[in-house]
Image (cartoon, protein in one colour):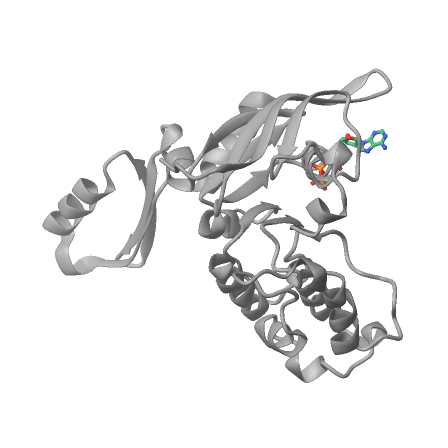
Length: 288
Ligand SMILES: Nc1ncnc2c1ncn2[C@@H]1O[C@H](COP(=O)(O)OP(=O)(O)OP(=O)(O)O)[C@@H](O)[C@H]1O
């Protein structure tokens, strides 16, 4: 149980476009330092939720508080404590990577404190997001994944207390993704991120919120969500060149039995435990 200060508070949030509620009665909290991952199918309302918290979008009803302030009335000082990674950065194509980060950094300098030096030093930050080789390159010459790394750097240059990331790792190669996960784990602030990558969600999330049809249909740690459904483990093996697969509630007992009976004739053994993906797909199906 986390006991830190509540930095994101959402209670009864509703968003209506015309006659359609795209968010209805969404409520959740995040405490200082927590990493919250918002999962859900296309059109579930993830971006809408994030944009309301960022203060970029109004809302139809409900209470929202970010660092103690209603985002609809957040001022510059409040905004300086947030980090935002939106869709890919397209402006400033002629600027060089280091130049652009230093430029955005100056915005945060007035908000530096003894405990939190702001902005993050541009060269150090470039290193942290793995863009050192591109530091002097013009932004329009970056690859898709390099641009996304720059987006992340822009989001954290002010050392935010709360960081919002909307699908941050789209287009990342596996190494960039791994480095990004390391970086997020090292950040001290509270993080709210959306992704469609369930493996990423289970690696990063202290808590997952599953949004479907504008409602939160489940919340918990990745392990709690996986256990929430009564899925069975899947065991695969081969014997004398023939392949077998079976679902069982107790894969350990089954495998013990299997080896007891056939010993060295067993090959290619695989045991797959019920995963977050199984839980997610079942929850989404039930909600639909
Ligand atoms: N300005 C708008 N006017 C009307 N409907 C909108 C508007 N913006 C978003 N919507 C609708 O609200 C719903 C939620 O959209 P949102 O972008 O929040 O979904 P999402 O969960 O982020 O989806 P994705 O995974 O595809 O990014 C969608 O049905 C979308 O069509």
